[in-house]
Image (cartoon, rainbow over all chains, first blue to last red):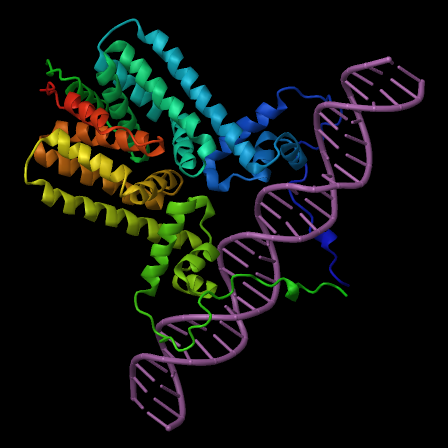
Length: 203
Length: 203
DNA sequence: AGGTTTTGTGTACATCTGTACATAAAATTG
DNA sequence: CAATTTTATGTACAGATGTACACAAAACCT
C-alpha cells in the first residue's frame, strides 16, 4: 500500500517515440539541443529553462540533454555563447552589405528597426545573455564581444570616439525599444541618429 | 517502514528563532520583505528568487512571505516595481542637485559613473527588471518609466531630440559598462558625451 | 567474427519549490 | 470582558527539477 516511489513517473520521457528505425548516431544533435535551448530562452526566459523544456523543444528524450551537457549551467552557457556568436556573425555579414554607402543615419536606423522587428528573438536572447552575465562571470566575454563588434563596425565608418558613441546610442535604442509596445517610429530613431551625428536635418 | 512523507522536513523553517517577545504586529513588514526580495534579485538574479531565499534575507519565517504576497510572481512584481520607483525618485532627486549648472558632459559622466559604481546594485536590479519585463507584460510600464524619467531629465537641459539621444547614450553606456570589468575610465565616457553633444574638446 | 568503446535512452530519486492550511497570538470591536 | 477579525507562523505536501545510472544499441577495432 505504501505508494512506492516508482509511481512518480516522470512525464515527457521520450519525445518522438514512434520513429523506431532512426539512425543511432546523430551528428549535430548536440548543437540542435543547444539551439532548442536558445528557443526556450527566447520564448520563456532563462528562469524557465529546464532540461525537460529543452528536450521537448528539441524533440529528443530527456536523457539526451543530460548526456550531451554535464549540467544545466553548461547547457545555458553553451547556448548563450552560441547565440552571441551567431549575433556577431550576422552583424559582420550586415557590415559587408553596408559598404554600398548611403546615409549613415538611415543605415543605422534600418539596423535598429531590424533588430527590433524581424530579428526580435535574437535581440531578446542577447539581452537575456547580458543580464545572465551579471551573475555568471563565465558569460561575460560572450556578452562583451557583441559590444566590441558594434564598436568596430561603427568605428569603421567614422572614427574611434564616434564609433563608441554610436555603439552606445545603438545599444540604448535597442534596450529602450525592445520593451516598448509598439516599436518606435522610424522617424524618431532616425532623428536621434542625425542629432548624434551632428547633422542638421535637411528637408 | 514506509518512509512516511512527514520525514521530509522543510529546512529554513524559522529565521530569528530566539526573539520570543517581539511585538506581533509589525508595520512595514510587507515592504521589508519586498526589499529583501530586491536584495536577492540584486545578488543572485531573478532565477534564484525563491520564497525561502527572501524569508532568509528578510529574517522572517517562510510563512510570512506567503502571507503577505499571494504568489511569488506577485512578490517579484511588487519588488521590481518598488525598485524601479526608487530609481526614478533617486534620479529626480539628482536632477535637483544638477541645476547648479556646470559642464553637461561632465555631469552626465558623473551620473554614469555613479550608476556603475556606488549605485551598482540599483543598476543591476533595473536591468533585471528590463529583461524580466520582456516576458511579463505586467512589468513593462515599470521599466518604461525609467526611460521616460531619463528622457525628461535630459530634455530639460537641452531639447526634445537631444534629450532622447542623450537618454539613449546614457542607457547604452550603462548596459555596456555594467558587464565590463573593470569599470570604464572616466575620460572615455566623458569624450563620448562630448562627441554626442557635438562639442569639440578644449584642452 | 568477437570484443571494446562511444552514443543514446528510459527511469529512479533526492532535493527544492510554491503554496495551502491548521493553528495561534494579537488587535479590534461590542 | 467576550467575540470576532486581522496578522502571523510552522508544517505538510504535491509537483517539478537536476542529475545519476543501469541498460542497450550502434560504431569501431583487430
